[in-house]
Amino acid sequence: MYRLRLTIPDCRDPWLLPQERRMRVFYEACASGLKCIVAIYNRPDNSTFRYRVYNVFRALENSSSFRLCYFYENELQNVIPRLGSAAALLLCRTAWTPAIQRAIDTARTKGIPVLFDVDDRVFDLDCLQLVASTLDASLEDEGQRTYWVNYVASICMTAKQADGFTTTNAFLGGRLQDKFGKPFVCIENSLNEEQLVVSAELRKLKAEADPDGDFVMGYFSGSPSHVNDLKTALPELVALLRRYENMKLMVVGYMDLPDGMDDLVAAKKIFTMPFVDFRTLQLLIARIDLNVVPMVENSFTDCKSELKFFESAVVDVPTCAAPVYAYRNSIQNGKTGFLCKQGEWYSTISDIYSGKHDLKAIDADARNYVLNRYCGANFLNSVEVAYRSILRQVGGEA
Image (cartoon, rainbow, N blue to C red; front, top):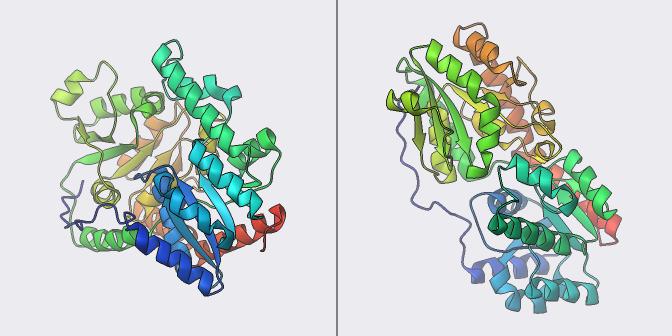
């Protein structure tokens, strides 16, 4: 583990720009002849909104063809009268409300294509039981059942009215096409400039630092619903912690540890940290020795993104991940990271710990791959190509 210190900027949520400023971006883009995608999200957050809206907004600031302008549901009264100037209305994982319906209806009357963006299989009531079991949600509990049925149904109500979709990977796109029979394009999750700046500074600090002697694995959980993911590898991780005296597991985010961990917690072999902002997250990842991404393997998790891989790679930390669709299509096993099925975590991590892999070469290969794919000019080009393609397919001006 690395004892790194870095001052994180006070502005933890840089996307919280005044509505007037975001509206000015829209006016200026339209006046300049750029194709303006108007994105609507129910409310800003540090997860889906950041990846699917803000990061794309930042990437397209460098585009000579497109701009993405984002607004929230409670701002629609000011946006709806101006939709006629947009190239498309993009509803991002947006639950149905009467205000959202008014925006859809207005776009229809003005001949504006309606797109829907989603990063998870939360639009299909037919797979609700799979979603619930994967996320450790009990449909026997009336409160949880009501929440999940209402949430998925409201997402579906919005999605089914779209002319086409943008999504994170082809597997999820295929499920959208199966459900709604509409075209889709992929816009992968990505790294924003703020992450890249912090990560570059952290790499410099690591190059000048020595590890403290502990070998720390990190598990980063965005929500408590990932407990079943962790459980798939936990017996092997616990066996490793009990075998190697200086091996530890850091769990960051929303996570209640399963029973039976008390002695390891008391011995500080397992320790937890609260959910942090996205730049502080890069600092915590940079400190560890190995990023572990266990996941239940099914058609729900095949819809997930490889974001834990690329956020780790840019701070030179190797990743061991379950071979769900996104990870097996981004990680080259043994070259840019490691893929581990159940039963393989113990041996793979033992080999890493024992120095049987050239981690410096793996870190360099992973970093170069990620910087070439998930940010910068190549990512910008992929976004432009995706928007041109979907607008062409749904009858908008490409």
